[in-house]
Length: 122
Image (cartoon, rainbow, N blue to C red; front, side):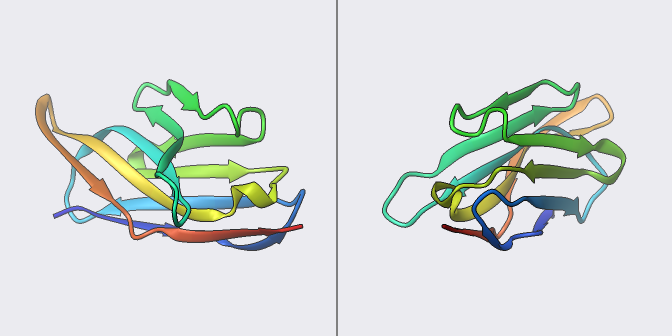
């Protein structure tokens, strides 16, 4: 049983910053990849940023240069630092953990958090 809990969302003005956190708990394991997605009603869920255990990162073109994803493997926690926020960044941000390991044994699996609301006012 794996649980992901996001925090750090809120209401900010355009140009402001927020830092999202997502902590995985429940069992002792290692996570291959962690990512942030965002969802807007009426639109498809999109990948915002992804980070692998070795530290390789990928970003959506719309957030490159503004958002930074990082992780603390000891805490099984992923962060998303969001700077220069724009109204179009408004969405529910969801944390994803994909690919669980126990030692060298690959367990597979994927878990999602409940989401945290980010609202950027103009």
